[in-house]
Length: 63
Image (cartoon, rainbow, N blue to C red; front, side, top):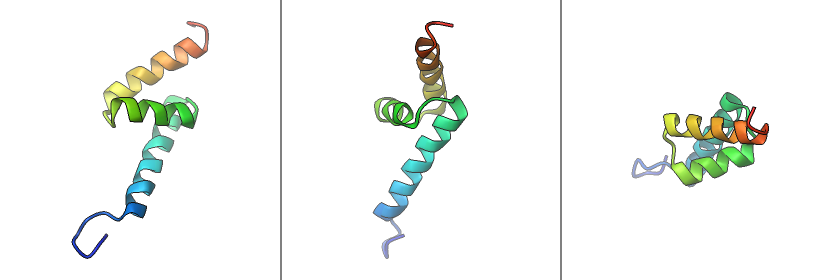
């Protein structure tokens, strides 16, 4: 935290990395794909889970 009570850049980067790692592990998609989904859809869990499921389905040839 900064002296003004704001999250430092390091804290923010760590939190972002944790979000990417969590989504990748939870949905079993590559971390790069998880990052792309977070950048596109923000950090809305239900939307991210839905889009990750679509990604996995498409990656598996629709199975």
